Length: 163
Image 1 (cartoon, rainbow, N blue to C red):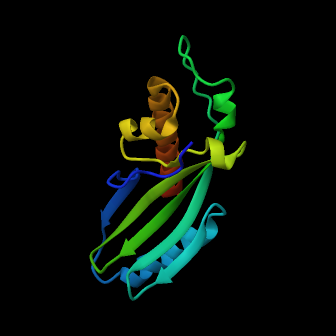
Image 2 (cartoon, helix red, strand yellow; image 1 turned 120 degrees about the horizontal axis):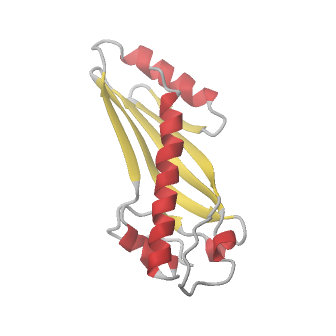
């Protein structure tokens, strides 16, 4: 499987924007940094108050349990494409607002990372089907499952952010 996304395909992302009280940039920035530090799934890559930015890498496990009957797919493909999804967490804090963006979701197989990884998860299922190399209907269901899991996992992370 090709683990790259063609030029022009946007990666799947989740953006949360919030308005905050003016003058509380440092407080929000420090709380966001503490939130990132407290999560064992986050690896902080950048902390730059002057650029209003925090960046971390995170991941979640992805067991591929998608089954589609009456369709010809490779034997054991669900198990072979189970693994994990890495993604970036970008937090931008300004004097009037902050945003959290979960982006650049990348799938990696634990069976054979080179052959069975999907790579960057694109914004739409049609693009994903092009890199999935299985039945298009099965690929669409896998894309829906990965993006649903991403929304659930990032929602759980956001719920812990009380800043």
